[in-house]
Image 1 (cartoon, rainbow, N blue to C red):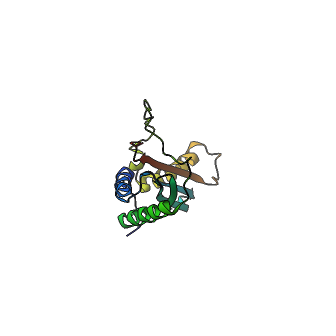
Image 2 (image 1 turned 135 degrees about the vertical axis):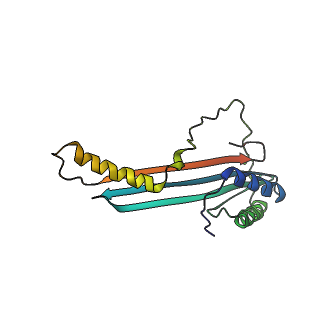
Image 3 (image 1 turned 90 degrees about the vertical axis):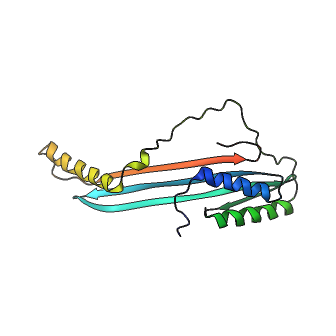
Length: 171
């Protein structure tokens, strides 16, 4: 199973919060992110370069009293969530206390800016390749003076983040 497969990060954040609450620490905060994208270059109607990437991970801040631990993993499988929370809880209990350690409270009136386009990922990869090839063809057809095109390139990226804590923050 690919440990970097696309996951629902809100579900992962909720699972992590549940694990944190059952871990024996007093408080916790989770940061879950996924990102991905495509870069491609077309030259003479052929794909010359192609990069597809997917990544993700999570970070936890766990507090036992005023003792703080921070742990991270790029593995979003359920068994990794459990192991990482358990390791973080052990580290938090062993850490030196610091009165400056605290978590944020939920803020009132914070608007969701709604910048994510659900249809962004709906364009199939093959369609992107076809569009680039069509652009190259059109560039030659547009003007007989066009004799050579160095390359046609395309790139996109997306990222999603959820931050949540045991005090009620969930964004």
